[in-house]
Image 1 (spheres, rainbow, N blue to C red):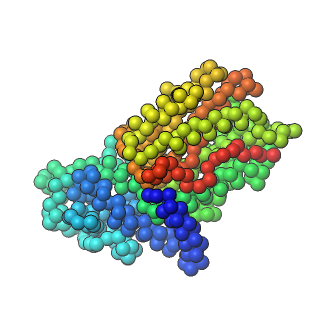
Image 2 (image 1 turned 120 degrees about the horizontal axis):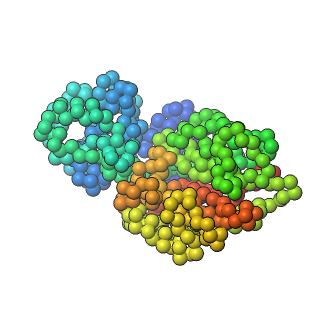
Image 3 (image 1 turned 120 degrees about the vertical axis):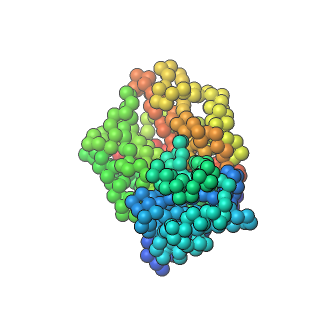
Amino acid sequence: MTTRLLISCLALASMSFAADALARGEAQKRWELMNQIRQEKFDLVLPEVMRENRVDMWITVNREGHDDPLTEDFGKGYVGTYGYYIFSDRGGDRIERAVLGIGTALVEDNGAYDIFMSSEDLKAFVEERDPQTIALNYSRHIGAADGLSHTSYQKLAEELGQRYSQRFVSAEKLASDFRSRRVASEVAAFAWAGEMSRNIAERAFSNEVITPGVTTLADVAWWMREQQFENKLGTSFGMPSVYITGPDGFVALSNDHVIQRGDFLAVDWGVGYLNFYTDMKRHAYVLKEGETHLPKSIQRAFDNGRKVRDILKANIKAGRTAGETLELLNGLINEAGFTVMDTFNQPTDDPDNIDVIIGCHSVGNLGHGIGPSIAWFNPERMKYMIQPSNLFSIELFAYTAIPEWGGNKLRIPLEDDAIVTDRGVEWLYPVNQEVLLIR
């Protein structure tokens, strides 16, 4: 995806969002946007990823009261007992798309599917196509690719028989590739969600919301939640993590602790729009009486984080695995004079060391997505190749000694969402460039 295409699609999307809001209701507008995304994913991404993963047929099972995590991607619909989304590679440019046992006019009208049949037709449907590999949503490493229950697996095996049950394979990598490779309409929707995320967070960390000595951390978190409800936004994280960091680390997190002058605040959160979820952070300092600027020691700590972020942005590229990228980045961070940490949240005691650990994870359909991950906490997905159009949360933690704290270290966590294009990392909204001041 080129930069020019990305900018164009974001601009057009912004104009269409405003125009559509006047012409139709919010629910219909969002349904139409998801249909556009779904059709383009099925047209452009599905053939590529099924063939790369050598999958002839992909079956996703839904039951009443038990939706697969990929249901929103595939268009939802009502299931009475069992329902199936089935994608079959029968050659040519188009993957055949079928729904069996999934109703409502919205599924038929969304334009994404070719065939509508009863769930009782499953065996005949599969036998007619005779796939050599059948991918199912069971996964050891990725929760969002592990939606197939044990009983649903048993039912498939019994109904299709030994001939086809021997051809079952995990859809773990297929689901990751399908979700993490983006079309332009997805990027536009996700960028809008990112802008909403940072706008709400930055307003939360201002005197609009916070009165020192009066406002609690919980007050801030609940205000952010109310903004989500007012703007019809979801979340994949629940309550925003609004916290204070002091000389001894965490002081309090989203509770009834009253915010005081001299506190250093951070928030870690994200919003959900359509089928997309962001993950980002912001920071604020509550000025003491007589202060007009951020203390120099805290500014230095924040600037150290930004320097590390510049290294990440300049060196995350498509065409390498996430693991190879992590090794490269850690080497460059050390060469720049920082100290890469072995264990999260355990900085060295040396006040001269600026300790750093990075966790640039996939983002998109969840706050923690299922694509390639440049992070110690996703070891399996460090094996995955970074592709153009992958969305990443560019996340790092930098620990700098603060003289006023007796040399104890302030943790600066920076995190904003970006896309990897053929040119490298490109931000999707204005990223965190400063510590916000609360007066």
